[in-house]
Length: 136
Length: 136
DNA sequence: CCCAGTGTTATACTAGTTATATAACATAGG
DNA sequence: CCTATGTTATATAACTAGTATAACACTGGG
Image (spheres, rainbow over the protein chains, first blue to last red):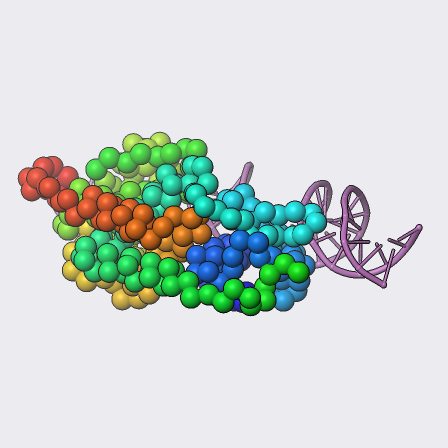
């Protein structure tokens, strides 16, 4: 799991981390049962503060993506179904993003094509079962 | 153009306004050439501060959705093509939103169906040409 | 038994953002 | 000239983001 901090981004650091974990999950780069790096390890690796990483992990835990335990650190959960109350908020966010494209003059076919392309990137879960990153 | 402020939302007020304008634009509720309410008018109507509305309008102007002039206030621009540098950032945001759905266990067909539904809402531009809101 | 490595909590501080409140300025139309 | 438009300038309070230290609680391994 590679993290990359964009220091010139307008996005808060803890959100960048959160998003990268979620995208890695969607992409299949990390899977249920896998461990995230320890809070301190990742903080040092990215040269940022422990609490910033902690905040990202707490958010991921709260949203249901991982389970954060005092013992094993952050472990990716198995989400067969969306967490409760997820879909409503998610559709609102989807609406907002798609509305931007319409308002900018993109056409429905154009927009839907982007959706399909992105979707294919994520469902391309060509994945090696036995490749590090796991709990040991 | 009806605005609705959610006081319990986590979203900043100025972003709520910005998003509602963009969605109204996508939905066809407002069209190129239309005037937005004056900053002071809208501020009073929503019982919020003038500067908060101004910030929303400035953002909309900066993003290319409206033109803000000292003379006529905020006027919706005609965006036949996306503003430069729009698409790159937009696709990133789309990726983030769609990745959340995947990570929550939704399937590709499910997700694409949502995209199509939202898209249809926006392309349903059943619109009355001569209905107020215009410049006068 | 202790040590090292987990997350967790507490406190403090700086900087930036959000929202409000007042006031004033600049411009042009009626 | 008055009025309505956006614009700019301060100031202030509350909150957020990020950093810095320090300490606490737990537990697996040596």
